[in-house]
Image (cartoon, rainbow, N blue to C red; front, side, top):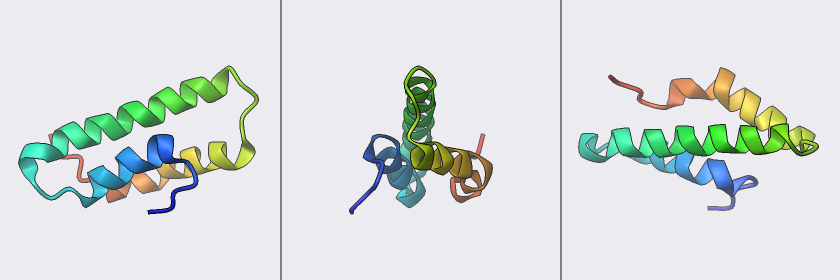
Length: 70
């Protein structure tokens, strides 16, 4: 898979593609942590405008693609 921002897109893709309930929560948590970590990194470094926008888009619109059951 050719990802533009693999630091956070790879764990996100793994979570989206996971259908085994035994593994789902851990993969969703890993994806959330990767996204938050990258947002924090960009906060202290001049952000790549496209990556920052991709993160915002994922947080605002892409979260519906993750099965975030309690």
